[in-house]
Each structure stands twice: as C-alpha cells, then as structure tokens.
Image 1 (cartoon, rainbow, N blue to C red):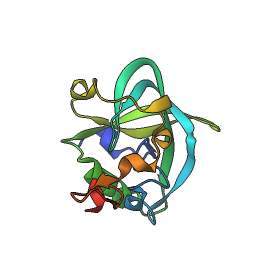
Image 2 (image 1 turned 90 degrees about the horizontal axis):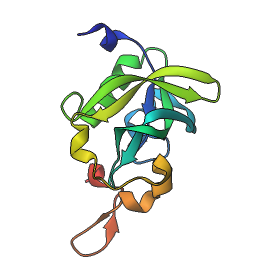
Image 3 (image 1 turned 30 degrees about the vertical axis):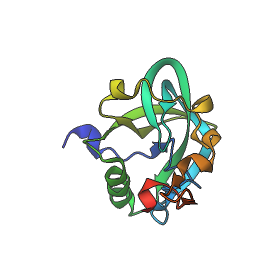
Image 4 (image 1 turned 135 degrees about the vertical axis):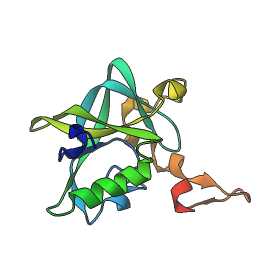
Amino acid sequence: MSDIETITLPTAVYGTLREGHGNDRTWKGLGFSWHDGECTIEGYRLVGRGFPYAIPAEGQTIVVGIIVATPGNYEQMLAATDMLEGYPTHYNRVKEVVHTPEGDIFAWLYTPDSPKRYEGGEPVPGNDWAQMGRAVWQYDDDDGSTGGEGWWSR
C-alpha cells in the first residue's frame, strides 16, 4: 500500500454517491454529507448518463459534495465506496484540492481508470449531476414501464 492510500481524507462525490441520489445509501450511517453542491474541483468535466465520470479537462470545474466518515467508520466507508466504484479496476481514487465555502481542502476523487475511453460521453449540464434530474437514473423495463432507481437497484 502506498503512503497516499493511508491518508485519512474525506471523499468528493459528484454523481450517484451525492446525498439524495441513488447510491448515497453506500455511506449513510457511516458518514455525513458536507456542503453538497457547494464545492468544486477544477480541471475536470462530467460525462455520462446512467452515472457520470469525472475526466480531466483543462479550464473546467465540476460540482461536488463532500462525504466525511464519522469516528471509527473511515475504513468501512472507504471500503464501501471503493467497492461501489470498482476501485482500483474501474475507477482510480486520487487526492484533489476541493474548493469549499469554508476554504480549500484535500479529498479523494474517483476518476475512471481509462479517461480517454469516456471523452466522447454525453456532457453533464453545468458539470453538476444534480442538473441531470432523477429521471435519467431510471431504467426502462422490457414492458416500457419505468422502475427502480437504476442498474444498481436490480
């Protein structure tokens, strides 16, 4: 394990892990949301439909929330978000500067293992997943009805 993997940091979340979105249940009870939608990270843009990817993009800024583990829950919360994100084979976890209303902090950010693969993805309006609306997370069943909250709820 590298030194950076042993640093206790909050996690910057930009998609389905944001509070009130489909996968916040991954960390609920292990941590709390801090300034969701009020924080930003420079140098990335969001692309995707069912769930987003943060890919490097000079001159762009993404909107994030911060999740902070409650005492004694850091390792369990990080393991849960790592599992959901497929770390380290689907997403990487990198240390980034996050601009918050209370000043700059460092936080973990999940980025795709192969960002070039997603460069042509559908842009997320305003680089803010909350602008996509919940409808985009719903799936269309074979009978044409909509059910669940997305692929993770099947």
